[in-house]
Length: 79
Image (tube, rainbow, N blue to C red; front, side, top):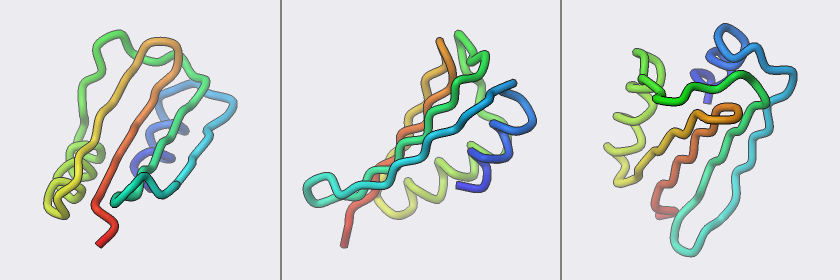
């Protein structure tokens, strides 16, 4: 999650960042959304690539979406 906060501070030009961690069936879902400038075609830098690798190693997945702010959604099995 540190990568998400760092990217928001350094790159987004955002005023706010919302982070939610909730159970989702047999998984846990993290959603982080900022109100910054976003990116039409997001390119993962080292920090977010590392985040993806760590979630995938646990059997999870990560998606990013950039238009109208930046959104990271990550899900990992709960057990």
